[in-house]
Image (cartoon, rainbow, N blue to C red; front, top):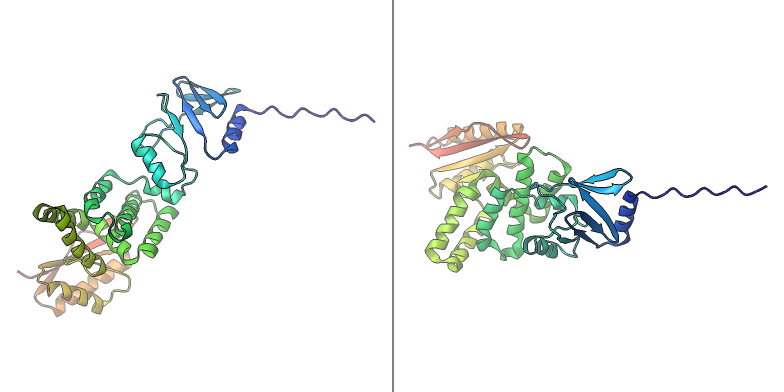
Length: 304
């Protein structure tokens, strides 16, 4: 019996060759020309916004979050993943080059998409907080901005949950308070203007020292005109928080709450406080949304 003639192995498509090239080495260069893209030792034509792979297969040139093509038709040599995040940032900011996200987790990628308005807030605080407490506070600001962006987009996905839990678990009270100050607008409307006044009056060095003393007290203790409700706050706890603030001669305290059950409980507690303390009254603001949850702000203030 004659042996059967072995079948010829199927011819590899150029697409499979592309992935073979990419899998050979961890780091590689993509060289972009006006009319072609070179990946390793393979070359592919660019026609009408597509990379031509052959066999009538084409790969559309994708765009990044800002609408810029991933492959820039300017002859740029694009080096992918470097060893550290710092090196990647250097490539992006100083060489204007792109890198692969292969070694970056999906959660970490979320940190790279911070809103411009949040970035502005962080940059204003950077001269006062950079280097302080091993940059925990700066890191907490970045985490808070990321959470807020996802909340505003109503993306209650695993990324947001993971980021939020990491923030609370790792940065503990610092992370929680930074998020609350960021989320409520207190950071932008009150703390940053105060920091800039300190800088203007004392200069950056002494102004930074004074700011850090006050910042430490806020994060470790309380903000004079705001309290952020937690799930275990009861009538005694809220009364203690309000008394401490009004004993410092503030005229009002804004109580922030989110979640239907907590909101209703917060209303009841504020009503009870004002009934026991006749010199105070409360004003319930219009309910609003934080991501997928309802939120309220109640102002307890001295009667005029």
